Amino acid sequence: MSEPEAIDASLVEIFASIQGEGPEVGRATVFVRLGGCDLRCRWCDSPGTWRPTACCRIEEQAGSARFRERPNPVPIAEIVESAITLAPRSSAWISLTGGEPLLQPGAVAALARALTARGRRVYLETHGLHAEALAGCVESIELVSMDWKLASDVGYGPGIAPLPGRDFHDAHAAFLRVALRARGVYVKVVVTPSTADAEFDRMLETIAGISKTVPLVIQPVTPRGGVSAMPSAERCLALLERAEACLTDVRVIPQTHPIYGVL
Ligand code: SF4
Image (cartoon, rainbow, N blue to C red; front, side):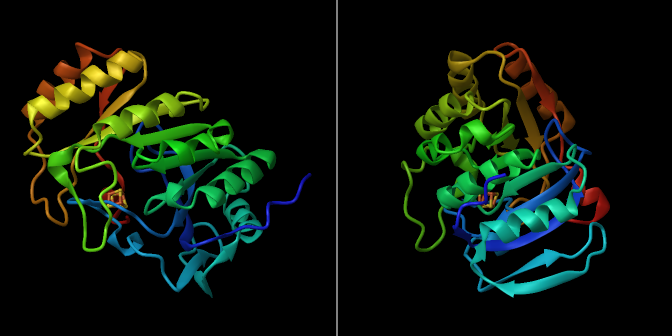
């Protein structure tokens, strides 16, 4: 077995939990949460990840909620061992998440390769904008969960460089083309009461032009941060019907982890 590459990562936390969204909802998952994000979504559930932190925390035993703290950065080999300790069965997912994990492309690539080599299933949760970074690791990812951010709900914080402009459409399209090289990929779009038909339809048209069969998860926003209400059931059904006119695999799936009272 080859050793993990000698790369460090800026980490926020590693913990064992249950996948709370998307088509793998309910499955045992170890979350490896990397620090730093270049977006500011109005509904963000993890603003503590927006900037790299001096220290991180690693759960000692799955479900124990006992954590040890250590300073950043953390060697890849230590992250791999910690994640595998929390996920002794190879059926569990190991999710590389954030923040935005692909802001640390070398770390994500090294983690994905090392975890795959140890027989683990690697799940990447990303805002879906950095196609070049994904290209460096996509073959080691079993499932890419890529967000499609609608510009009406995503902004930039102070000091956040405008990425491809405030409209992420073309960057998402480029990302999806690369993500289709992974063994699995789905697109997730968070919808709010202010989501406009025009931007939703533009997304659908572009996804369908790339692949009509890529799964699309419509996720009604969980009210938090700058969002105070979910879209109605009628609105979710209307969006589902619009999407099913273009794509073959569409589901509405809300987040479930707020039910347990965890992030
Ligand atoms: S991309 Fe994710 S971590 Fe970044 S602001 Fe949006 S929801 Fe939060």
